[in-house]
Image 1 (cartoon, rainbow, N blue to C red):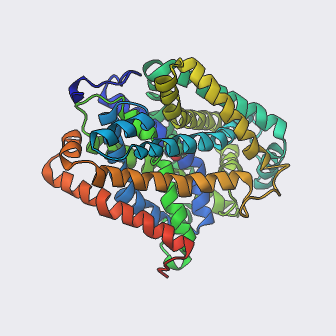
Image 2 (cartoon, rainbow, N blue to C red; image 1 turned 135 degrees about the vertical axis):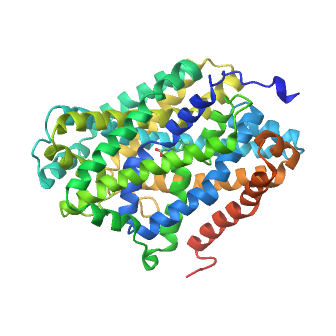
Image 3 (cartoon, protein in one colour; image 1 turned 120 degrees about the horizontal axis):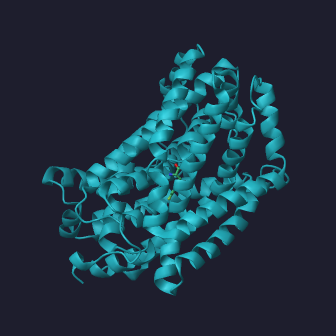
Length: 456
Ligand code: PFF
């Protein structure tokens, strides 16, 4: 098959810019605003942040380029793309298992992602009702504890979010995914900058910055290095085919390198801005940086309660957070939807409904782990923590490792060079990163954490 005639049956992005926005929409989400601050808090700040930034640059960007490149070359769902490219390169058909790993990871992530997005959704209404006006840290804390102790209301918000995701996915690439992201990402960015100004006014801004950037490597454990690396994959939506499937809708003439760098930079900026908003509020109110998954829900409302126009800004903030989560959640399920359409002849609508229902059901487990199942553990973690650990810290880096190996070692350099279409120096640098740096780094972190080798 000549590659010129290959286009995706699911459609194509209308321009390079819409691809960048959609991929940024996938990357920027709860991972940046909800997860990055709380795992930074739990892992001691500065040194953790540096490892995370290094992982973005040395592992994340090259693997993102590899994923987009594979997707654009294969032009199908990740499962079929991997099968087609393996055949084309004369490699075993088992490479399509990589697509399966991604489908399962996306399903598991979306199941708990939707629960947390449901929290954000319910906070839109709390903020709008003026509930946070003048609230103290204790007041905000008890609002949050009360909320997560009630499975019924959490279930309702999880359901609404899941239905919203399925509606966009069912409408398809152009009508659904593209339209949802064009205005929302820039608005979120602007609102975060407004909040950074508030954080500056707390008198604790420098303390917040110090926590984020002061590097004390003695605080770093092999476990926190694993979490930093896993988060680099999670936040850039890598290792599970989401970016690959978006790449499959990419027109031929786009520079993959430039687009990947822009996406990674935008994603990292949003996370760092979120950190610069949250930690000054944490310190100004004598709160605990290691408060866990509730961190932003226990800190930001204090700010909204104190600031000028806090009801409006708070409401807008949670609205945009929900949209950021929404544009990520659609990419979590897109690889599976595309596969069901390709291989089982289902319409996008039926594929979305079936997958949405399954994911919704799975989400109930995470939802209950914040209340009635909080003492039920798997490997010492509650169900939500277990799923998050398994997907972000094991499945995504593993997927990324194999993507790097396939793009770097299994594909002929002629094929990858042609698809990436960059100048020779840039190409060689990328090749060195996907062949050696990224795989070795992922393996060292894995081995170090299992205790097989110990770098301490
Ligand atoms: N990158 C998203 C976030 O940071 O919230 C989460 C995510 C989306 C992870 C899509 C993986 C993925 F494939």
